Amino acid sequence: MSSPLSADATDLAGAIKAGKLTCVDAMQAALSASEQQVALGTIAHLDAEMGLVSAEAMDQERLQQPDRFAARPFAGIPTLAKDLGGPFAGLPVTAGSRLLRREGGDADSDLAKRFREAGFCLFGLTTSPEFGFSLASEPAIGPICRNPLDPARTAGGSSGGAAAAVAAGIVALAHATDAGGSIRVPAACCGLVGLKPTRGAMPAGPFFGNHLGGIASELAVTRSVRDTSRLLEAISGETKGPFADIERIAAQAGPLRIGLLADTGTRHPTMPERLHAVEAAARLLETQGHRIVPLAWSDVEQPALASRRAFGDIVSVNIAALVDGLKLDMQAAETLTQAFILRGRAMPATALWDALNGAVRASRSLWNLFDKVDILLTPMLASPPPLIGSFPTDHSDTDLHLDRMTAFAPLASLANVSGFPALTLPFGADADGLPLPVQIMAPMGKDALLLSLATRLEADGRWHHRHPIAGLAA
Image (cartoon, rainbow, N blue to C red; front, side, top):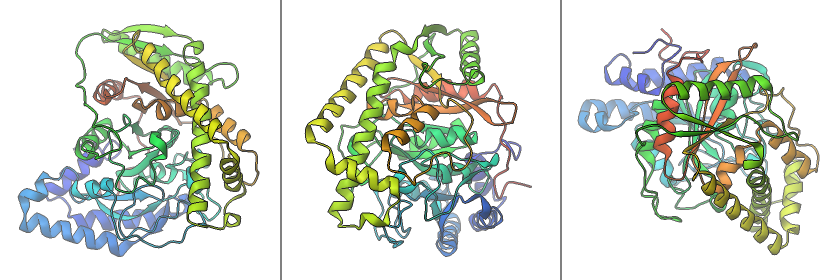
């Protein structure tokens, strides 16, 4: 097994299957860690009884149906769902908002069923910003989620609670969603691996409540590329709509053309040390036989701008439709959320249609770029995780808020709006010990290629986790 600080969910599953600890032992360790680290604000709702009942059931299965238990890749692993997405039966999602009551639903989403089939034991919901409208997880209803690497800073959003829980070692892996960078940004803030899969690779039914016209996807934040790969294998495919099943293309052998983008323009510039990390990753891949193709900001500027507009318009119309459809009192929402609701209500259908057409053209531009390169290697974050309070929601300026998010993660929404897979992982640390993340993107269906390259970058050993996983600390 790996050392405690480098261990991942695969190691924890292996320890359980080897009899070094029971599923109940692992759950009790996670519950203890969540209590000890409550000040981080990672968990919005905790159900210890649910977790222990699930763990006990898995221990019984190990004794009575050992073959079935052994077939589950993450048998007995404690984990948390995000307070946005799913849903997971029995876990009362509120999307970080006073608009929704903390009442548990009775039905699993297709994705939730697959999490359970993989062997995970759920025991709570992680903190997210109200309706996922921020790259910080600081909902007015609380808790305020802090970064385990520096509690004065954000853990990112909207899957910030998930990322903080994994980085702190409360759980080894946590469910997350991504509509505008919401898996990748928190992973980048906390030194984790985050994959936004190809559009259509993950099940979104039967309710499609977090679908957002195709820009949203669900998976997890993890401590290793192999965990991400194993989870993707376990729960993707056979989605039953709304898209045709994605053909998963095996990672190609031989030299690749690595499109290196070490620039995010003058309006939203990236700090030099973060650009240097991207260049260092490119040099490493070059030593392994791949060819570097330098790219300019002008190669992606227009698709990036179109993606930002499409994201803002889609989420505005979506929240307006949700509030009006459920006849919710918008006055209970945060001021910024109210502004997005009003923006969505006021938006002409022709304006939304124009934004959606812009998204299609953005996707086409990327396809044309992938005629010249096989992979895009880019910055993930323009700066270190900002201080708590850097994304306030007590104002009504939606454009200012969207601009703040773009300034922090200039290329985050490009993958969502275009549908391409994108992965982030840490590739070094800055002078304060905070991660220097990079992002790699590939054509649709080539998630395996991203994972293959990420494995090579991870193997260089430039990042080390700060906290061991609960249950594997000794």
